[in-house]
Length: 160
Ligand code: THU
Image (cartoon, rainbow, N blue to C red):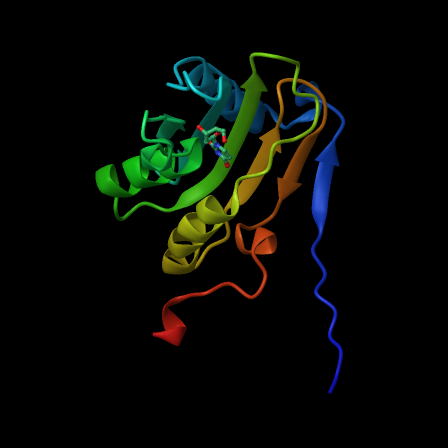
C-alpha cells in the first residue's frame, strides 16, 4: 500500500473588483443571467457564463421543475447550450454567481458534482483547460485553473 497526495492550486480574489477586466465582464454576464433564472422552488438563483475562443459568451441559469429532479443547474444549461451551438469552439473560462432569496450569499458557490462531471467531458474533449471562477452574491471569488482540478480521479471515456 502506498499513500498519494492530490494537490490543487486555486486563486482567491478578495472581491469581484480584483478580477481581471475580461473576467469581470464575464462575471457580469453570469450575474445578469442569474436574474433570469427560473427558481420558484429553491429561490436560489445561479447564473453561468462561458467565454469561447471565438469571443462569444454563452450564458445559462438554473431551470427548476415541479418534479424537482427534472430541473437543471445553470452550469449544465450553459455548457450544453454552448456545445450545441458552437460544437467546434473551445471554452476558455466559466464564471458562476449565485444568490438566495433569504440571505446574502457571501461565500463562493462551487459547481455541484454533476456539473463538474458534465463540464469535464468538454474540457477533456477540447484538450485545453477551462478557468473556472465562482462567487456568491458578494465577497471572495475562487478561481480553479481547470474543471478537473475540481474533480480529481474523474470518470472519463478511457474507462469505457
Ligand atoms: N444549482 C445550480 O444551478 N448549480 C449548481 O452547481 C448547484 C445548484 C441550482 C439547482 C437548483 O435549482 C438550485 O440551485 C438549488 O439547488
